[in-house]
Amino acid sequence: MDLVTLAMFIIDEIHYQPPKQPDLNVMGGAGLYAVLGARLFRPSPSSSKIGWVIHQGHDFPAHIKETIDSWHTNCRFIDTPHRSTTRAWNRYEADGYRSFKYLNDKVRIDENSLTREQLTSKAYHLLCSASRCISLVEGINAKRKELLEANTTDGELVEALKHTPVFLWEPFPAHCKPSELSGFLAAMKFVDVVSPNLDEFCSLLGVQIDLAQSYGWLSLRQRCKEIVEHGGMSSETALVVRLSEKGCCVAQSNRFLRLPAYHDQDTASRVIDPTGGGNTFLGGFAIGMLQSAGSSRAARIEESALYGTVAASFAIEQLGVPTLKRSTSQGELWNGEKAELRLEEYRQRIADFDGEAGRR
Image 1 (cartoon, rainbow, N blue to C red):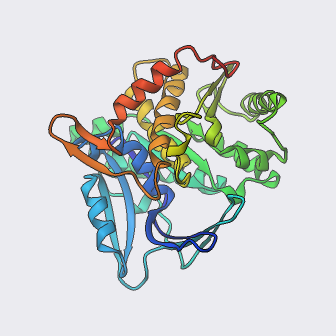
Image 2 (cartoon, rainbow, N blue to C red; image 1 turned 180 degrees about the vertical axis):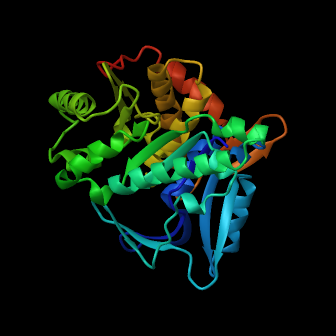
């Protein structure tokens, strides 16, 4: 297995300003989008190396099940016929702000939800509070150790489990506040990548950073440096702050890289709905770390940000997920394009981009 996400799948209903009618039964949830980000770079049959868990209620729509099945991933459906599938209400306000609330009880996923195969994954994606992050990392590692000790003669399993997995953590937005900072710093020691978005990062530190101003970028860089240097992070841990239409920044020990978003002024009209872009970024990011395994740790992290940026670009081009079609001559196409070709195009485009200064 390459990547397993422990984030949830949700069925969304999305409401807009009148007179636009709501969209119902929309695929959603951080788990879905993290899988999408990885799936873009893992065509079938390699797609079976991407794992997730869905609690399937009695009302699970058939058309959504068909779409998920068509991705050919390693999805564990857990039937919960006594309940409805986890659903959420979303409303977009006139200023673009999105209100969100769950419409029913949610069922969380932990190490006990994973199959034997999913416990062998090379990477795990988490979306949770700091305390739950630590619990999940420790729980997954304990399960892997238990599985290894019980199967010492299974050469293939032993080989899969002897490698230390990569953990990518998205802090839960509601827990990004100054009172949670000490817990955040403690949890960072357990993961390889921690990735809040800009609003979450600012909320966690109790500051405001305006990237419309030149000093805003200097402030962001300084704040990232403080977290990396004084937050107790290991030299191999990366802080990746997702900046929406402004791209992302990657902070590591003695390194700082800023990357632009894939969609710029020339392609801004293709951006339809930003929902899920950040989760998709992390799914793509995880695959980037595996793809560039022969490089130095710092170089792998920075290369992975390219994968994440391109993955996010597909997620935001429509409501829900991009359309997957298969071509005899071209292979898998997402919204009519190959993800690998878009990655190469983006790589060439930023070849003369100064990641330190944030300009060409």
